[in-house]
Image 1: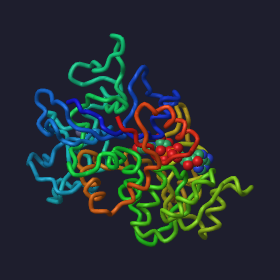
Image 2: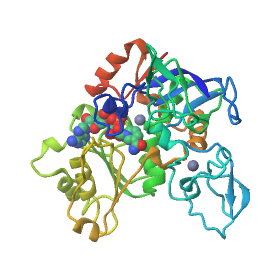
Image 3: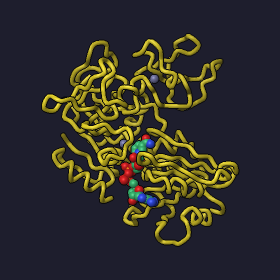
Image 4: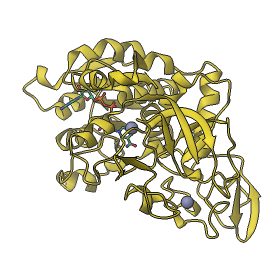
Length: 380
Ligand SMILES: NC(=O)c1ccc[n+]([C@@H]2O[C@H](COP(=O)([O-])OP(=O)(O)OC[C@H]3O[C@@H](n4cnc5c(N)ncnc54)[C@H](O)[C@@H]3O)[C@@H](O)[C@H]2O)c1
Ligand SMILES: [Zn+2]
Ligand SMILES: [Zn+2]
């Protein structure tokens, strides 16, 4: 299907791919993945969206299904949480790609993941599944798609599984942010870590993703939220979002993980790495409490980078995990997140520090590199 893109934001992942740091980056391509628009046309067999629907592209594809084949039975879907799917249970099941594929992908059938693979092999190669070709050209030569979304374009072509139809009353210049960074931060806290009331939390990196973790940690009633960034200009917003402490690793000769361990009588219950730096990932793991602390990797590290720590850190009970799109099952969850925004229950508007025209995209990248923005929303 094709969509007219009306608003697109910049995410750090676009900058990182543009800089050649993404191992999967294919060029020439059209970047962009945090956006909102209107369906312009639908191809043969597309049934879940129609011309004129308001949509948010979802790079983490997900079926449109509201039903699941469970033990051969179709069951209505009523939840998007990650409840373990017990074959004998009648508890609400997951979404899956079976309405679009004869055989649902095994990822959609598995309760522990949101990584639908139905179009992944093609989006990873920058092409469409139907014919293995791109829908974009420049001077007669093909341009690759990016993340199955390519929203830095007035019009884009995406797979049906890669859009979420949302409430038409929602302002697209705001809810476009739900296509990536903010949802990712919220989901890292709610779905991946499952932060509970009274837990202590450390968030490394105070861009939009890190702030979204703080927002969610406040909602989860974390007792202490330690915000960490090497740029002290980020601390004002972190406090405004609800951080109880701010730590600049450059302020102390002691390693930041030790600073946090000392501040918290042994470490935090949960930490979130929202930078994309493997040294920070190590610090985030090692500031977790012995016995139960969990660290969630949200940041995307550059090609070829590897994480390391002493294995004893894990032997003694710390847990290292990662999250893509916050574990949200995109097509099902994004419309619900839009509804949450419409109910006034989020700080979504506060992440937008700049509104610019699409023609100013290079200035927007400069702001991102200089750490001077949270989210820039470009209008096309
Ligand atoms: N897992 C996912 O699905 C997913 C989704 C969206 C974004 N991301 C990734 O999340 C990360 C954050 O994205 P963003 O848009 O918020 O980026 P951003 O650039 O706006 O924010 C990064 C922050 O990290 C800080 N920082 C840099 N080095 C640091 C250090 N050594 N210690 C502490 N802080 C440091 C910067 O000052 C900045 O405030 C990126 O790596 C991005 O690619 C992942
Ligand atoms: Zn992103
Ligand atoms: Zn699937």
